[in-house]
Amino acid sequence: MKYTVILEPQKEGGYTVTVPALPGCISEGDTMDEAIENIRDAIAGYIASLRKHGDPIPAETSVEVPIDA
Image (cartoon, rainbow, N blue to C red; front, side):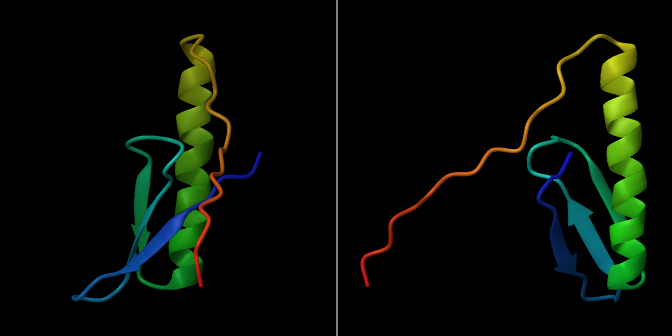
């Protein structure tokens, strides 16, 4: 599975990472690489919990937004 993640630099340093397709799935790291590794672990745990409880696993969705240039 592939999910879009959003990396947000923090004023105090480091990064916060969220996964829009997985509400509440959030992590952080001191570096971009660490934040990405941490969110991979968070995604795996999130999906494991969904499976354990018999809940559906959200699929990544994309939306095309036309831009008049």
